[in-house]
Image (cartoon, rainbow, N blue to C red; front, top):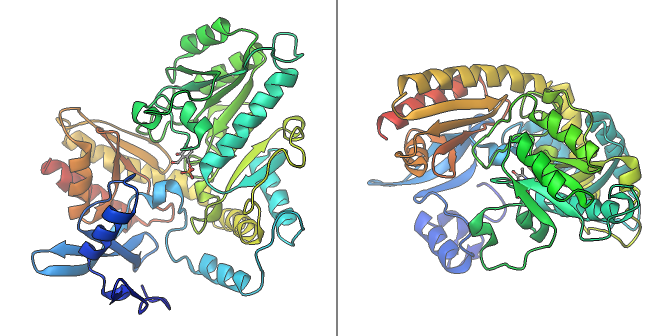
Length: 437
Ligand code: PLP
């Protein structure tokens, strides 16, 4: 806390005096129940180090303030950690000057951001959006447009509904197209009919992809994958999977699209995860999360010029996509990422962190099936008879915020700038938490 609204009275109390229970009641009664936040803990702000969070915790002796290691970095969205002075000061200086204006009039930062994006991603053109799922929705539109005009065996356009093939257990966000690309039952429940023309294949299975391409030969417009399945439990494909998938997509005159929303911006030890696997540049990639250093929702569809030129005025748009603050923060993030060599740091820190977590895994081999990762995107898989949610609750008790994905995986993805002390604390907490599992 420490803002001008701390003393604002809401529901009869200054916000700074709200108890954890007050917050829980407001969330329970007024917020749609789409998350299950940890009970008994409230984040007050960034902590004493960039990878720490200041929290209030309910204890037998009342509410106590302490610090947690942030082992999640908002699902990879916070590479520099919290309260980074350069990011904070730059954003402050910017909002003192620039108003919010729509895309129908130019401003001084969109152009420079686009140039920097081109240098950094090596893609040709860009459509800025806000949340990650919006970038995926725009990608789906573009794939369909391309399919209608240039897809099919002869490249003269698909006459039926263009098909997009995506992977089982994928996560692409909550828009309707993104949801249709996911096979997860809870996400799809009661939403039928979802969008037509979507097919799911097992991830990391080239014969299954080829069979699906053959089944819909002449109608497939896109193969849409995550380079590493993050929400599925940090599932890392075989070295040649993506390369072969890309080759197959081309063979069947289909676009090849990667969702780098969680893996991009250095997280995996490469600027973008596709660069880890010797691929040709994908036709389209989608980005989000870390694009803004985690200070606001910024996402982007990036792609080949001839594809992106299919968008025209009125075919797409966004009030805040590419607005001044997003463009400024987008540009600032790439600049800082390069200046601080964050990608290399993710590779180095990732090697260290994976190493010490693997040692803990070996020590608890009766509970841990595997520790796997790329750079600073790491998963600890436990055997199904153990409960991932209990493990993340134990981690919290031991001073680390990390979260399970599905029931048997603990995702560990701290701010990339975390130091050795912080990484040792994560490994130590995992050791203790597994002991109590
Ligand atoms: N794609 C991937 C791979 C993601 O991990 C996420 C979010 O976790 C999304 C898309 C959706 O991003 P957002 O929640 O910003 O819409």
